[in-house]
Length: 447
Image (tube, rainbow, N blue to C red; front, side, top):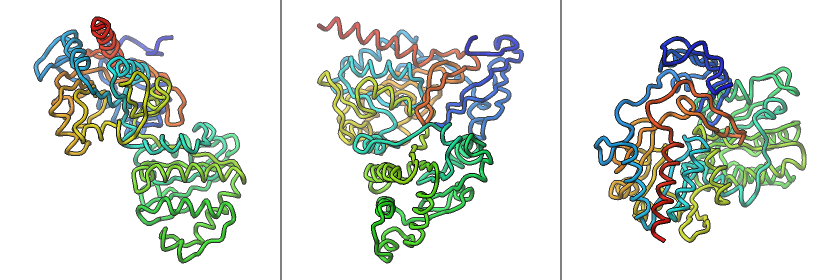
């Protein structure tokens, strides 16, 4: 059966078409039970999608205009490929960045391009869960799939994460509400704890809310690590450092030891505050410690639809998840030195390939100013500040809606995409395949 399964007619006829088990790539949940009703090039209904997923599907319209612009002027795709290849091959310190909203097949091509040009390959992980990737290498990870959480988890802890707003179906499909094999009563069989510096909408869904001092996650995690080992602590010191009474932490630890299957979901509220990778190391170590008492796992609440896939693909190809320098012919990993926001801010990169991301809208002022000074190529399904400033800008098909491929859910489970209708623009996989081929030809001719 084709990717556009269970159709009543072709989309081009303007009649109704139904796509079963479509995957929503808006966030890291990658819900793959969506039923799309499509009429022509318009999605009329997205059954079972959350409010964010409905906006993703129902508001989608292919970008009008040419598929390629060179210095703001319309051009053919082949002309754009040639100009882009020349920019990358002429550069001495090129940067390839983005990838988290592209399928794994396209990500693989991007890593190949970075290798051929002797550049740096980096993903948006470096500005969100990069500290988690660093911590994993030092501590390791005790984890599981979201399916296991649904079937087994009876104590669910959210730390620095607000899935009620960022991942609306997380509660209902995976973590709190669903009835599982060992949680037949759903929500009644689970205790939910929310730990954050402020009361979010997710806190309203929790049984217990613990509000810690801002920038004190590290101290709070080490308090729990000490309690897990039965170490006596000074109550006044703990409350001064964390903003939470020692008795509250002791009650949480008692619940953690008493549960059958505990799960900690953590977000950028932990990874991008004071401590960064040290915070994540403490959380991963706490999870490891808890397995001396019961079964405990940890999982990152990832944001973009395929940011987990980007980590996996770059790791497969280079041995490291992001910020990898390939200039010497072998991979070197050093966050802060090879990560894109830093190389741009220091004025080091002399060319860039930006894929499905918008650094012109969210990097520091110094990084944006440097990016505007160098030649760079941008691929995106829609017009952004980055595509408007690009030397070569490609408009590409939207993955999951217009083009197929594979993405990874936040728990590293691969999900196939079932597109709804074709786009007038090429996919990023097709463009990057052509670009890699042209780069290889130019490099081969130079030797």
